[in-house]
Amino acid sequence: MEFKVESKITMEISVGNSLIMVLLILYALLFSGFDVNALPYDYTASIEASSPFLNIGGIVVNPEFDMGLEGWEAYGDAKIELRELAGNKFIAAHARNQPCGSISQKLNLQREMHYSFSAWIQVSEGNESVAAVFKTSTGFKHAGAVVAESKCWSMLKGGFTSDSTGSAELYFESKNTSVEIWVDCISLQPFTQEEWTSHQHQSIEKIRKSIVRIQAVDKQKNPLPNATISIQQKRPGFPIGCAMNKNILTNTAYQNWFTSRFRVTTFEDEMKWYSTEGSPGHEDYSSADALLSFAKRHDIAVRGHNVVWDDPKYQPGWLYSLSRTDLSKAIVRRVKSLMSRYKGQLIAWDVVNENLHFSFFESRLGNQASGDIYRLAQTVDSSVPLFLNEYNTIEDNRDGAAAPAKYLQKLRQIQGSATNARLGIGLESHFDTPNLPYMRAAIDTLAVTGLPIWLTEVDVQSGPNQARYLEQILMEAHSHPKVDGIVIWAAWRPYGCYRMCLTDNDFRNLATGNVVDNLLRRWHSGTLFGSTDSEGFFEASLFHGDYEVNITHSSSSSVTFQITV
Image 1 (cartoon, rainbow, N blue to C red):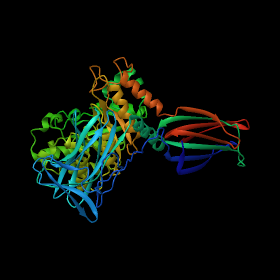
Image 2 (cartoon, one colour; image 1 turned 45 degrees about the vertical axis):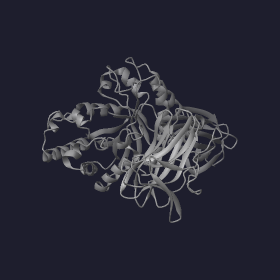
Image 3 (tube, rainbow, N blue to C red; image 1 turned 180 degrees about the vertical axis):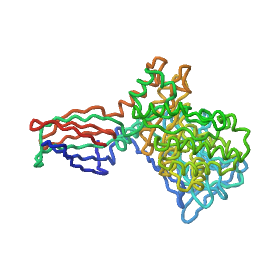
Image 4 (cartoon, rainbow, N blue to C red; image 1 turned 90 degrees about the vertical axis):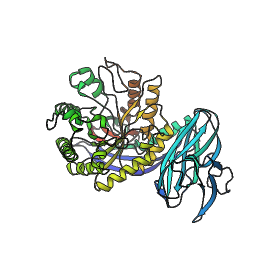
């Protein structure tokens, strides 16, 4: 395996009056070779472009239409024709009488292969959601969707895992049959499971680790060979946590299990509006205060969840009867009360929860309600990112309400109202059967914004593959270069967790808990021991995080210091 240097940071450390000095060099990895002979995966995506480009290529015949219409035909009674605009060739589907009216191509798929898909889409007028669909022998596979515009090309990036071997037919669909669908630069790239796993390992080596090179020298800068070195990781750099609830406050076994594993958390219910203000003006933050105090004692960072929730089912009971004016005043009081109370003590806020699927506040206060709430939130606490928090954006490519394109639309709407807000992308990640190619592509698309991305409520529905699916999801998230943190939604309750527990009621790991423990160990450098070479050097590849280093040499007493990799 080969490595190239992306960046190099050199520090000189002198510890007390010791004769030992340390020269510390950190290397970040730009590239590492694949473990198998695999095609690379392109994590980049684009939202709009004046001229489309081919992402990878793959098994699509005539993907850029250099051979005219060869390999392509009409689908769903549409008419198709080759057109050219500013030197760029594309196919236009027009005279569409059905949503599925578009272009199509027959392809052969292989069972259990992962397929990465991309295409550039434009519509003749306005903006419309356009989806890519594969008709297979076992049903319809939705590869992804994009909100396409006129006079501008938009990239549709998605994917799926095939559950059968045989012929399939690719086509595009849009509910608005009055618009033409224009398509260009279509890619369908297959990957084996081995290749997909290789992408993950290669990415983790590149983005989650650095090579640390330590040189021990004396005060005259002479190298100290055969110095004994120990490097112990004290705190991971990549946050992986788990939700908690007030049950932990009185259960020592729960406390011991949790604090030995996690350094970040979200309170399951204790900050939510229905938990803190059961009647108007009567606020009770005692449970949230106690949980925050517990987290602080154990050096556990906390995400604030949530300020308001757009689902009409989860409001304080007294909220429903308020007039528009009184509801607006109640929201202002809520935002100011909650966020000012915990300002400076949290690492993030989920501000308006699930406002792609629901619109409780918009239906009463107008379409600008979410933007107004984020603008107010920014004035109260501008110290941390303010997240949207939504489900099915990466879990289910059939849910058009929360597709990445819809998420980006909502982001832009909020940014229009809360122009200076520090926003973040929260992906709840309540999975049934994970679609890893779509999950990866969806995150690619959202990452174009440059905003922080967290998986905020990871769980998997109960079933025989629950633990295996959980491992796949966590691997995919941890290996993605643009994911900044993960919270697992498995707060313990004696009568059962929300959808997934990690332990039984005696805090013995279930299969899901074993998955988490194994990955935490795998993504942790632990303690390394070694000795310097003839030039006083010691080198190690370490996961990012905080470390304590101890160096001992026969010519001096030992020195101990901290580094952050």
